[in-house]
Length: 478
Image 1 (cartoon, one colour):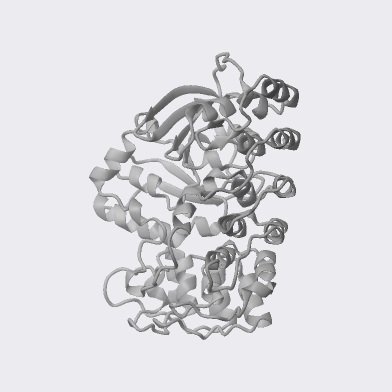
Image 2: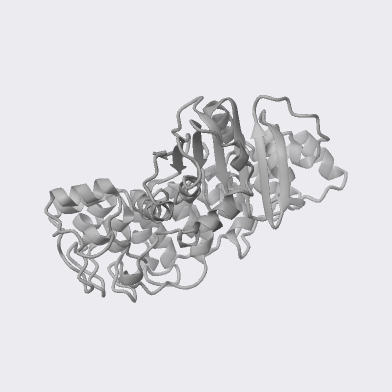
């Protein structure tokens, strides 16, 4: 099964509301507009975090679930001579164009270019792809509570720390501190600092001290796969739906590798397994998104009823067409491509998993797969934001999408690729599909206007792109 690091909080924001109108003039600040802090705001936010007082010159820091890299860039306003590794679970979540756009913002505040080193790392279902024994600090902000196999992940994290390295955990989601402490200490860490205030949890863990003994309870039994102990405690009257904030026993059980026996016991004793209105409260949503096929199958076989958000997250994060197929077969109806379930298709396009794309577009419910949304965009435009050129080849060569089509604002598929940040996608469109790098939209902008990654700008330069006359490039928004 493996683990998958799933960054859900920002994704959850994308799930609310209706399909936004898309104005290329306002296509700015990729996915993280709320993190374009002032220097004062950055100091206020960061100085509250325990890592603030521990940073020293020369440190190597990993930001797992880095998203836009806003924490690392904001820290660069105040600290020099650092190396940051920005890690994400899939390329579209670690968009270099978005990073460089935000970097320009913070360097403008700083008054000079940053001297810190930034390294981009994309993990997968089984590993972070970070170097071993390399890190003084590992930061996890609103991420650990949504990792699929906590014990496997923490074994991996221990390998990445230097001898005296520390892990800094923060969450604003509805989880309780004891959940984090129990799972970390069950896997060889010690909590040396914990604070809970203003709806936030901040903790520091090290892997060198011996954790103090703590009274065991049903959460420990679930984490340790002790089904006999779980059964005994339930027989004593413990509520099977007891929770640590949003994390119920069933969700915790599913977050431990090869813990199906405990999950089955909890379900037999009446653990709630249906999706709720918020996907982060649902075991099915989390496990579907994290690619846990056996766990998802168990929940569905036992009667869990999937909702559209479960399917949307699975299409985006799971990288497993079997899970997407299971959810559809058990009643998750994506509807037509441009219908109420448009995010399912949008997220499938972003994920770049060809098998998931093929399956969803083959459903009779998908309707006219070449349909346009209110902005004149097709599934092809969404796929251009992804990082798998095989998906784009399939759309153009097999499904006969037209790469020359523009949306209602004159946006080309190459402009979307520039915004998406994939060099492979850009090369494919320019070199194989012969897209004109200087084609204008209705605002007079070309693909160069929407690129921020220096490598991408250099590539467009080398293919005869004309630079924007005024100002820095801006990003197209969806």
